[in-house]
Length: 358
Image 1 (cartoon, one colour):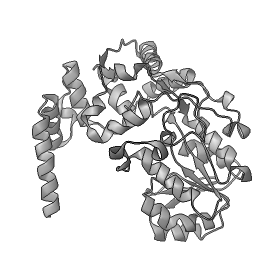
Image 2: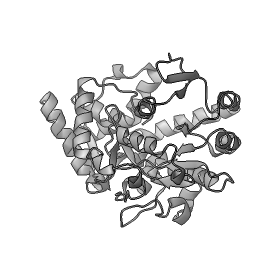
Image 3: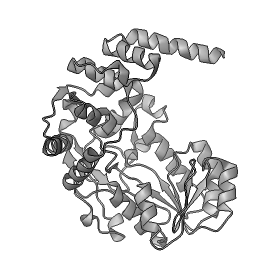
Image 4: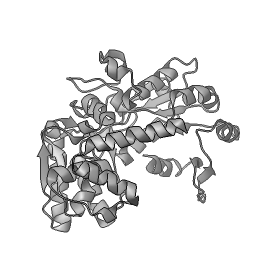
């Protein structure tokens, strides 16, 4: 969302972008090198001007948001906070911005005791809603995609497309196949955010910016398979487990239980007052277009050793150890690949104890 949003705004305005890497400014786009989580850097930057709008893509802790909120709100006419549609509880009807949030209605004490992403974002929203100043706008994107980010259930492209291109099986799960999802092109979300900038009617409110069209995860999978066959001439083998493999990793279970297991479709009447969402790319067209572009120039950001090993175990396949950097990663892969999870857990516990002793 960030890059297309900058390009939209910079057509008629000066835009200042923070980056930890040194980048050369060009045209109306000016780069400020530093960490926008850091109070000193943030204060120095914000004191340069009184800003028309501040759009905050930073993943802040609640403590960091509380520490910097007054500074952020006082420095601008409109502070735009990026939250997430994951805050919403399950709904049998299309979600509106007034649909109850998980934080407000969940009875799961174990879940509520965590600061899982859906809860963290809702708690940060409350910090804004409870502030005296109301010159903020909250954005709740749903699942966004582009040429370099293509999701399949809980998996990023690094966890399914990379396998497909390497001639390995994609591992997916039956429990998600018929769940309804709403996937929105990042360019469309960016256009929606840009449409809210400078609008007094948007202050003090939350907006989701999502495609008006939804589809099943089985449809998403079929779009991916047919596009790969069209571009590369490859038939992709898919292995379906009964439940998602993410359940093996406790820290990942809530994304399944309290998001992907929900049927997600959205009522876009609030954002439609500012932009015509009917002109957004349909997921059928957008996913195919983005995957086609990705296949011509694939770029994978990371390797998930844990899922790679688990999926190889299920598929009875093997990833070359040369794919993993360092002995530790190779051993981790082998332990999980051959279902020696208990040894892996003991090693992890031992490392934790050593770290505490240090």
